[in-house]
Length: 288
Length: 325
Image (cartoon, rainbow over all chains, first blue to last red; front, side):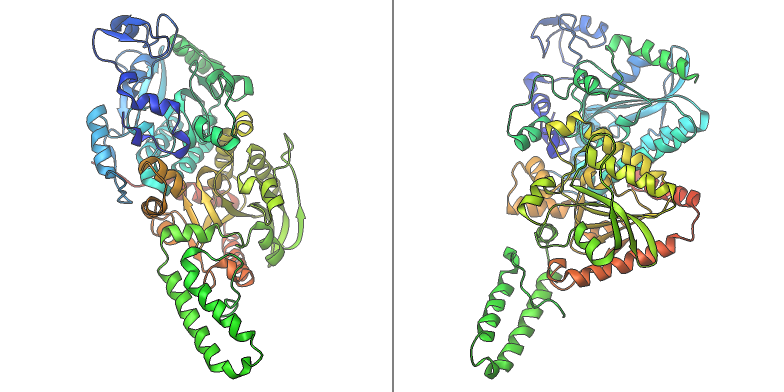
């Protein structure tokens, strides 16, 4: 994927480089065989797919698209999308080395979706939920007006029907090409969650690799329960920016899901295969 | 044209033509026979003021960023000194520590009792290091929230001064939950049942700025900036290199000036700065800021707290531009 679609200075991190290199491209690898980007094992593609896109050798969790995420989490055939027609505009007429509308068009063609967020209603192990999933392959999963508005609407939908809300994050942060408008989505989504909280709603935030910048610093960190996938990069600033600031190498595992759990900011690191049962159990405990 | 005579200690590159005339004025004034040059002096002053006016009328977004970062620009502690009476500083977040990058305390402004919350960059090298140049740690955001909740309890309005390049990007800040601290502030500020006004007095750098700016009314000083990322950060990523040219392009595209942000509906007001920027006349700047705060708090006092919260929610809910087929 294009390195330019990574969206903040703080996100020019190692994962951005990995993502930008075709040889190490994550997401859905083509062909019958594939190499694990973590342990380098040669894997039969179908066996990885059947293992929820987790390496059977080293348990590396490959990144998922929004569609793959929803398909894995919800009961088959139960997802009913919301706000599919909500599409990005170019309010600032942003032009860097490319035009923002051209970047959008390329991302839309690549993913088949209008923007980096899918939301809708579904069932998880028979429990009715409102769900959202971000797509890192769409401009680095960055949050602009569409992502923020879809999140606000799915929160309000969950509030209206008193349903549990699950949002799976995968994002480099706020989208630069909508500048201040993107920034305000942080306030918008957090404010919507405050209202949802006031009415006793249950929000389960699931953090996947990577979740950084303005997404972490808003709705993603506001779950009643916060789950994270193993080894997911989670942080505010990106590792490279931090290294430049403190001028020393960062410790192993810094900003990984397990580190966040040990620092007290993630309730539980949960393997992908266990997410459905973890989420449905929490829903039951909350009585939703 | 008051107060603009004094050349600031630090002249920005684009102000150099004005500084040159200032030097001429000074050398004339220092002559023993200075009284013979009254006409020349007066002419020079006119030329200088017209030039300064022209420079600031045609200021580029990137030059605006440099003015916003001017080391002599008034900071939170200056506004406290210039417009607050009976300031009672309150320290600490009751969890970890006391972040010097965010100052908080009770104060009186005009007829209003308020809670001050403001980023502080530091006025000298020692203080700047202490304040991490205005980059707050999580304890700074938690301190701000703790004091804002205290204000809410006693129905005291909150006045927030925003002036940060961004929240601190460091190892300890991450360990202590920088993202969680900011997120919590956004959520809690949106439902605080007391009036909140926020003024971007210098730099409004991304989430670190927004962390104390979820307010009923947000104003920007004329030559401050407010954006999702700094121009240099943006240029480094999207233009692959940060230099004078790409920083200007990024600053322009980011729509970070007060005028841009007002046009895009992200702020409610622009507070005028003296000719040549706030750094040339802190008193006049403070007077303008004080007037806006007093008027705005008086206006907001019409609303009961629940209505305020409802309106605050709707305001932020409406931000963003999308198309829907």
